[in-house]
Image: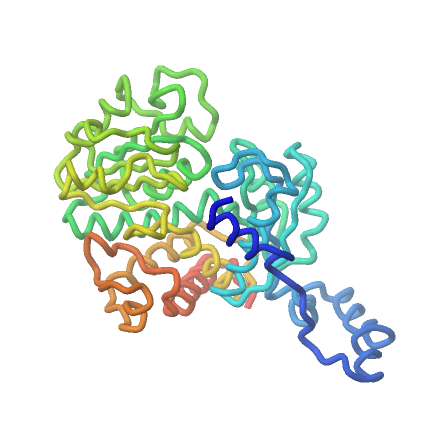
Length: 399
């Protein structure tokens, strides 16, 4: 057994989260207040006014991390129970980075309608729901139904977290190489939930030329096998392969699988290309190989051992923090965009020296630093405030 496997199993021994009481329970009076008879009074208050649950229970700071285990990390459909370490990990990140409590809930159900019904039934417990690792295309249907039918924020992070962070990276990288978003030729390899959400957000910021490839080739006007989600990105081009599409392209977004690109594939991209190769744990092409043939490139990956990590932890904790702070009834597209803009702006600010020491390298806005680092303490106030203000502007804030 390798050292990393041993360390991982030891780290997870007994699980990563626990429930601890917030109030005193040291006396007979405490017991009578915590449970019977005292607990009856907040129950009656909530019965008379359901919104009182935000004041008299943990709901105002509690998020559910829910999965059915059908699309877990790079592991695929491993089942609900095997997904639990990932969901516990998500709960740890919520607590560490945004001071949000959460329960991980693994549901052994693949039927979308049944899963929707289960989640709706348990929703009163929570102030927000983070859907996780649910495969496409079912994830689109599940998220849409829950957003429409519940009055709390619901988000499938695999879709929108990557979109928010990679959009911030795109905004900054384009600024560095002095290219306008509307002029970019973007090639996307992969057409799953994350890729589609990224493409939608890029479009919302003005990107016009997107060419997306799935396992059957270019999504274009000649195809008759496209899901409704893919139909939004029908190209009028007839590229025979993504290698052909990459000639003259400004941006490559990879959300597919490891090592599918060669140096030859990227040699003829436009000057100062942006390569976001986000397949995990190994990217579509190694950054070292990119730099050998395209030293002018800006490269981002999903890994922490390279510069410019596109990490969802830069988005979801603060998106939910801002939503919870104003008791938002939903997460709007504008709230996601506000989070992305605030994230991009933060990377342009001077980085505290203690953060440079933590990461043991100079961090200043440029080709190797287009996105903030996860342990930047400025993320919480800056991003959550931007999200909260957007919720107020969109009329979904209740306080």
